Image 1: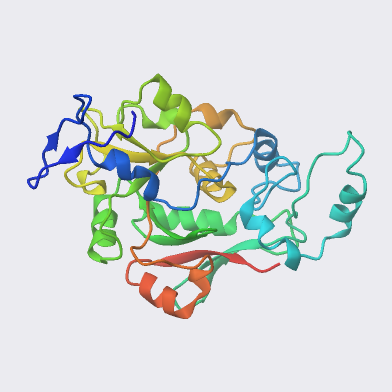
Image 2: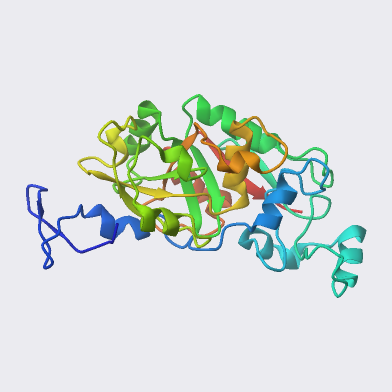
Length: 307
C-alpha cells in the first residue's frame, strides 16, 4: 500500500486523491506512530546466537555484532568494562575465524529489569551470569498475557505495550489519555498476520526489510483484532520486531525453542504499541517525572539495567 495523500471530510469519510484513489488517512500517518525507531533489526547471525542455548548470548537482549549494531548496547558501550572473554575476542577481530562480535555479552553488558512504578524490581536478569537471562522477559510476557500494560524502554523514548488481542487492555491504555493516535501492531513475522491483514506483494516485501517500517495495511474482512486499535479506520498500522528485546518477547511466547525455525512459523502473540503524545527522553522510564506520567497507564516498566 502506498501512503498516498487521500483527504478526509469532516465526517471522516474518504475522498479520492488526484489519481482517483481512496485511502485511509492512517496510511500517511503510520510512519509517525513509532517515531525514531527506523533502525535495522538484528541480523540473522545475531538471531542465531540469541536462540542458541549453547551460545553465551542465549536470550540476551543486547546481542550485537560489527555488522548489526544494537543501539541499546551501543549507547552504553562507553560505560561497559569488557570482560576477559570480550577482550580476547576483540584482540582477535582480524582473524576471520572469530565471530564478528563487537557488542557486550551477558557477563559484562547491560541487562533487563522489570520494575513497578515505584522502582521496585519484579524480575531482573542476573548481571554477569549468561546462564540466567530471560527472567525479565518471561515476567513481562506473563503480565501482558494477563492484560497488563508495560512501558518498554527504547532508544527513542518509551513504548507503551499491551496484548493487541485484549480489548480491555487497549481500552485502559486509551482511557489513560496519553496518546490519542492509532496504535501500531507488532507481529513476530508476516505469517502471524494471516487472517487479520491483507498485504500485497510489495507491502509484504517492504514490511520484512531490516529497516522495519511501520506500514498501514488493509484489514481483512474477517479480522478479529479489536477495532479500538485504530477507531474508525479500515487499515491498521503494522510493524515487525525492530529490536532484540521484542524478538525475545515473541520467543518466550513460543515457549523459548532452540534455533531459528520458529521465526518463520505463525505466532499467536500480537503486541499493540503506542507512544505518548508528550515527548519523552530515551531514559524516560528512569526519569521520576516521566515515570509518574507513564504510571497513569503502565502497570510495570521494562528498563535497561546498568552493567
